[in-house]
Image (cartoon, rainbow, N blue to C red; front, side):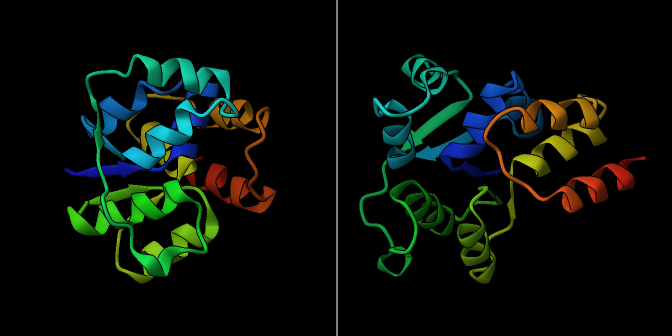
Length: 156
């Protein structure tokens, strides 16, 4: 399964100490070089900078030489992640940003976000969904209470 990730899902999984879910769920994750560049940027969270300085063997960085020009409403990492997902083509794109998700879906790229990763992990008994959502809410991750309520009710 070819899985591409944007920056934010990696960041949030790192912040809640759940980054090891990626290789358990997907074996291999591919990020475009623009996502790596966002991670090493001095303004990026320190945990992200430290992690990408010594990336795990299950992470592959792939160069995206020409980004789809129709994606200019998105940040460079999102543009490159969607472009790479189309080019490969990827089986799944992990992206949180609402506009990026909508554009990817419009292009028939299967998408999930950080919550989707956590929900999949909970389905496999790897995490307690309520616990990881509580930890996620202690970061700057933004999601509506309604979505969280529905997710937890469906799990129960």
